Length: 102
Image (cartoon, rainbow, N blue to C red; front, side, top):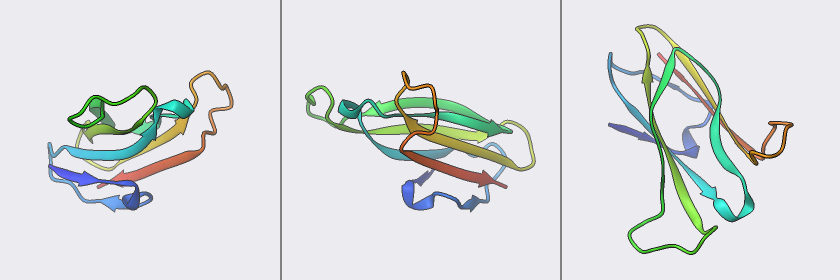
């Protein structure tokens, strides 16, 4: 499984049919900013979880949001994620991540 980070933002990734891509993005829970899918085209999220490490973490500590995605059918796809506060309605957030899959 190929792993991507914030350094891969804005890139086009060539994938094999059925290949799953893992996105690993930093998230600070104490700020209220959480990563979520803003839009997608021909991309399905097959897993979405938070990794906090081996040791118990205090509430609000740094963590890594992990998304596993793949194309829902052959062709090209686009995924855009936003880090925002769920209770704020503007949806602009403080960070964005997007990739194209081909």
